[in-house]
Length: 223
Image 1: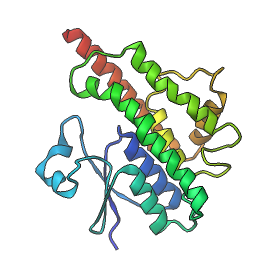
Image 2: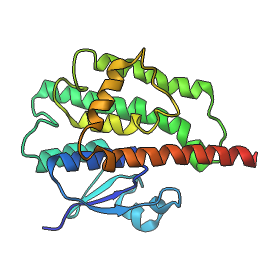
Image 3: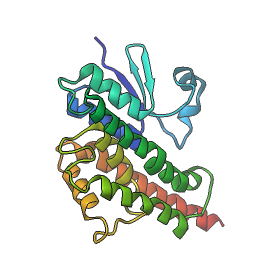
């Protein structure tokens, strides 16, 4: 059977969350890079696959799934040998879902609020208010981790992959105070110890942060 195809970008936190999940459960993906800066996600060919024209997008032998959180849960349900990453227990699963909604509704939404205008629309607005808006999310993350190693208890779940991909992509621009957020930083260090973390997440996160800084400087110089 052909490998599932993942349309992705290394810069994209949601793409990296999916790749972390696939690696953890042993699913070999065929990767097809999409250049967001060049607008390759807006071509008629890609929109035909995904009318929402977002990445990542999964093509699992004709089954199309988009939204990283949906893809992560789909991969675990279909391919994982256990349900540890996405528990079948209703209460545990609700907690994982809630953390993933926190990523999409707060973490990633606030990253986009700062990054997107600068990367795509020539903005120079990297204000203290926007940075503080991101940093407010760290309070909640610290609370999630108050009594546990991971976001949903003592076991790694797909919620951890989704949230770490986002936070590691903005922690330079919106620094994490070690005195206020020791649990959050310990969690990030714990995940960075995964053998595949550097190649599948850290490299892309660093690349995105460097691109953000370069585009901000370029936009300011134009002004």
